[in-house]
Length: 288
Image (tube, rainbow, N blue to C red; front, side, top):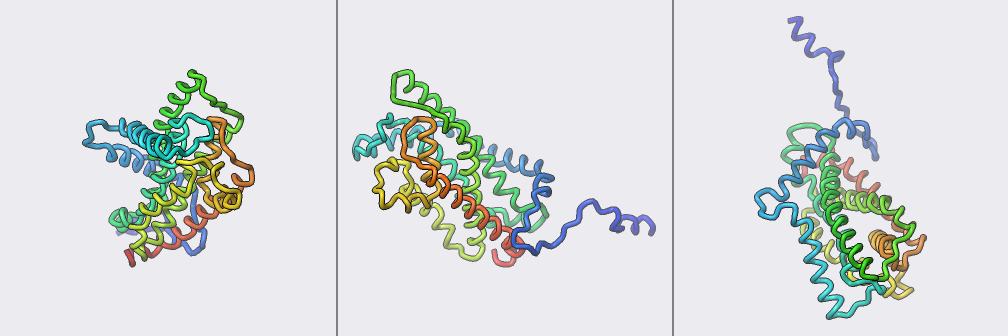
């Protein structure tokens, strides 16, 4: 009897799960405590992604390479869209690899609640661990594709192409963090809304495709009329891609105020997503 009392004694509890009532109730220390679980999710997603495929991680290289070739033929050689004097392959590849990282983070985190409802209903852990693991997993794909971009960049540089990397390269880590934050914020925002409005699951893929054409991925920002520049600045990915191109290739029309607006929009979307995510995670099992 004494043994039973000892087991249920509150003094022996090592973990206490308390209800969350605040609007921005995110426990970063708890997320860090579950870092091993996040890494386990990363390994699971990475292995499962190309399991039973013949080419495996080679697809990380083939996907942007094939897309770059198609964009070069369609938008460069047929539509004759200018590329700010840059080699077409470098212009399109720079836009594709940056856009792919953001878009993949957004789409794969947008179904966090729906996809993981079975495990969420059985065991407690910080729900935010799942979308964060998705963002980290996609980082490996981006790193591989970025190396491919550097190889092509070196090739064209040695051939004498007008490529001028500059001090804006120091902003590269900031751009990477911004893309991750934007993809995470947008994804968990959509995931929270889809617990009640399932129509959004159909809209995400379609919407991301439309969003890409509203972003200077296949055309330079310099081709946008001045009267539309402010509207384009509200698209946070516009400044990310233009800054990336300007930093690594030395061509582009990015301005500091556009970058500031982009960072502000990213912070707004991330905070909005986190607030809604923390509110929905308390009751989503009743609606999903």
